[in-house]
Length: 63
Image (cartoon, rainbow, N blue to C red; front, side, top):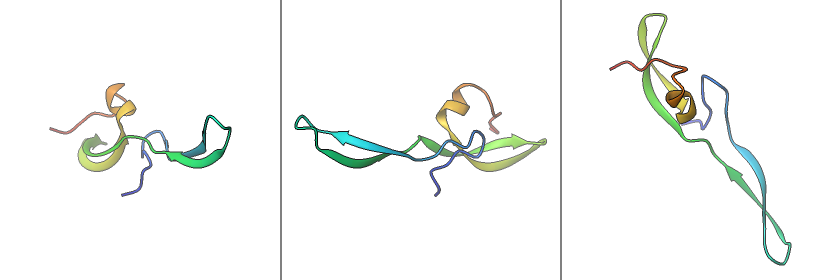
């Protein structure tokens, strides 16, 4: 499953872990993406949606 939200486009970002001795180690942060059934144009459809979009009601869940 791709870790990309199909609503807002939020995806994986990368950066560094910085230790006390100031060594930099690459790491990545992934969004909390859930595969849910949402209503699109009146019909239910499975989509990968981040929890921020679910919480802010940017999509309507199909029950």
